[in-house]
Amino acid sequence: MKKFHYTEVKKEKAEEGAVNTTVRWLIAKNTGAENFAMRLFEINSGGYSPYHKHPWEHEVFVLDGEGIVRGENCEEKISKGDVLFIPANENHQLKCTGKTLKFLCLIPYKR
Amino acid sequence: MKKFHYTEVKKEKAEEGAVNTTVRWLIAKNTGAENFAMRLFEINSGGYSPYHKHPWEHEVFVLDGEGIVRGENCEEKISKGDVLFIPANENHQLKCTGKTLKFLCLIPYKR
Image 1 (cartoon, rainbow over the protein chains, first blue to last red):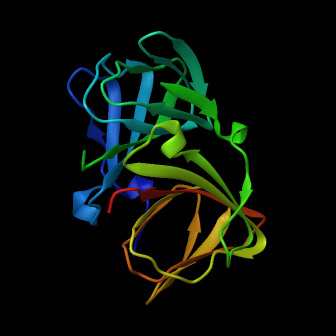
Image 2: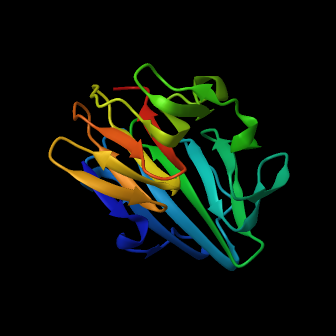
């Protein structure tokens, strides 16, 4: 078993197209995970992820902050305790509307 | 895309062997998830999960509360922001040592 606090994991700049956004890969292949990865994102004031799609799903849990999720046919406010399921191949974007939007976003390795 | 607050999902009694413990299946097959499931557990005062093992891993993020995780060779305190990776086939148990220990626990569907 591995146990650590999320702040022990190095914060990295998020992918191309993301603004004011960092990611921590909390549980990944180098942790021993073979099926899915757990990442913690922080989108800071004025920041957003790219409006994009890809052939894998997202499972999201909002830990803190205020934001907006934009989908193909909707735009909804999100805050602490909200859950998102974004299916594969569906356009999506997350934006911070407060100070810092913090959320877990999990993705599969096998698809 | 699906968006909801975790409290909108029905709280159920957790599996056999768990004491004072409830589970909400936040993202599951009926949500559209094919690769892994997101569950939210609450272990209340005096409660614990069974000391057991199974052929699939756990990815855990502690949301709130105080507790202990017991592994095959260790026992560690856990609290908000802690992350656990419990590999397949490794004995483990979580106990609440405060009022309510609340955590996400994700499991694979394909293994």
